[in-house]
Image (cartoon, rainbow, N blue to C red; front, side):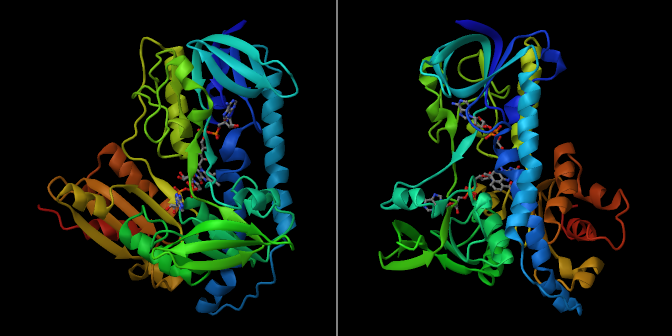
Length: 468
Ligand SMILES: Cc1cc2nc3c(=O)[nH]c(=O)nc-3n(C[C@H](O)[C@H](O)[C@H](O)COP(=O)(O)OP(=O)(O)OC[C@H]3O[C@@H](n4cnc5c(N)ncnc54)[C@H](O)[C@@H]3O)c2cc1C
Ligand SMILES: NC(=O)c1ccc[n+]([C@@H]2O[C@H](COP(=O)([O-])OP(=O)(O)OC[C@H]3O[C@@H](n4cnc5c(N)ncnc54)[C@H](O)[C@@H]3O)[C@@H](O)[C@H]2O)c1
């Protein structure tokens, strides 16, 4: 059995661990799919490259409000798709070639599973017999996969090519005339924006009454209303069966809370009901690695699993399922592999997220509803974009920033933004929370460029009514 110093399962964030400091070690990297993982190949990067053309496609609507006449003449979908993947695919294959030529790294293209506390079996593509390796230390960076519900007809419709996940929807041969999106979370919100802007008739079917329901309730309510003006929004219904039609389209049956059934048809369905961490595919019990009740690998603050020679990072262990979290955890694991006597921890206190839809949504920290549930005292200020100078230029009617603070300490507890540039506007608030900057000091201890949209943040902070 070949022995390594370190074995990393998964070439997404796991691949970032191997830098020049590992040149004196023998490193095995195992990847069963496309090199580079979710973010590069089917996640953050291509989706945002699809979102920007969608934002542009909506500019005639914006322009019209501001007195500029623009005409939308269509999106050249095949050209967008080929441009995006023409850029990304070579980065993936180049990254793979780079690793393959490194003398201290052995890249295995196959599927790993544990067979002991320090050994793996790798089913290598194209080979009959699995390969076995052992290592002093392992890193589980195996990510997550899109969920498929176990529903009648789903498999047949999937085989017929009518049901997709985020893995395949961006590589469709042409722009579909119609699409059903199942779910109301991040993936659903972003692709509803993309495809409806490109010209596809989108129907969103969501079992709960609001889209982005984990967001602050006012943000979620506004987002749901605005998205409902752009797509056919079916709320409080869930899909119970699929049927592939002879003409290649698909029919879905959805039922409401009273069991009344409705039927919807489209050229394609996008399943967007969450992602399952991949720990369940790794035979972790053989290695003494535990998972929690939701299927995430259990780790301590140092990213160490219940086997102290095995580390984990990213979607396989992190409920946040975000790339910046996976990257931070990869840095922790990297440090801990190199400095076993001086272990680092990952700071999970203030994890921001953004949904790149239209409107954009971005948030960090507590929601009002979570603070109410905790019975915690807080003050809040909702600052409308339309009430600052740049918001006048935008003729903004709807969007806002909500900040939530502890009235006694003046520390921010949460921030929620829905509107243009939300993902960028949020960052100073993340910084304030991370470094313990009080809202008064933050608002008045620096200049805010006038009349930039950041004045939304300044005014939100100034509007908080603190105890003293
Ligand atoms: C459509 C979409 C858009 C997203 N957009 C954003 C965004 O804008 N911002 C953001 O922060 N996050 C976004 N995310 C989430 C982000 O992509 C993930 O959180 C991140 O990529 C997880 O990284 P990871 O290293 O944990 O896993 P991955 O990058 O998924 O890497 C895991 C790798 O392990 C491999 N693997 C799994 N099992 C095995 C095995 N048994 N043997 C060998 N190899 C195996 C997989 O093939 C995969 O390549 C998005 C996700 C999706 C799906
Ligand atoms: N901009 C970003 O950062 C970004 C973008 C896309 C994806 N992601 C990551 O990928 C993850 C997966 O995205 P997602 O949108 O698939 O998941 P999600 O958890 O955001 O949303 C899942 C949706 O499916 C619904 N749902 C769950 N189970 C269901 C069931 N059994 N039947 C019907 N509906 C059900 C939920 O109510 C929710 O509306 C996200 O958690 C996020 O961390 C991030």
